[in-house]
Length: 220
Image (cartoon, rainbow, N blue to C red; front, side, top):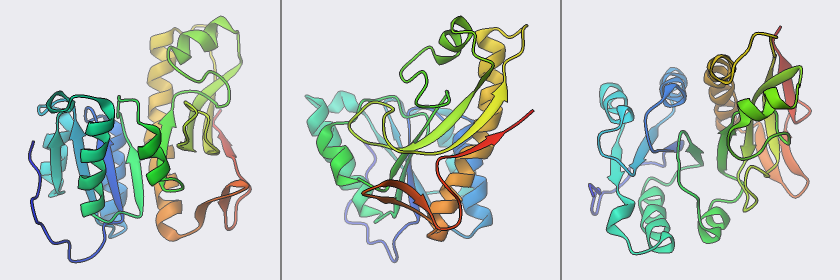
């Protein structure tokens, strides 16, 4: 585990991304943050050889590697993860290809500033195998959703969605590829909303200062 022991953070970071591997969402978020002058950090979990490590290194982003194998249980791992995240004092924690189930204590600690992206038009098709399930259900539209994270799996307040038409020739693989393209636009947009102060989690759900939520952008 590579932890910045005793490191003093001069000023809070705008966000921390949690990854299990470095996909396109991480790259898109890095590009958006850099363009907006935001300070971000990345915590890579599970594997130290993730593609995300090379991407954060190229961007000069502080990165910590934390392996769950060093901990006896999920609660101990989440406690260690919380301590590292809090060292950066982030306003937002972004799950970007983070493949571990989080404990209730972790989710509660970051309530209102923890977001995730899911490959379906929530509340439809929470969980796994979303593209195959969408095809099996003969839906005409599919897509991706960003939501605040709560203890309910994929059940937190939905912030925004990108919706695409399902083609008659679509396979789970082709549909997944097209949805992923939308994720790379959708996720940075929502992160920018939060960074600007326009997006907040309230007792009544996700609220944007100028847009009715959940906001759905239809791509034809």
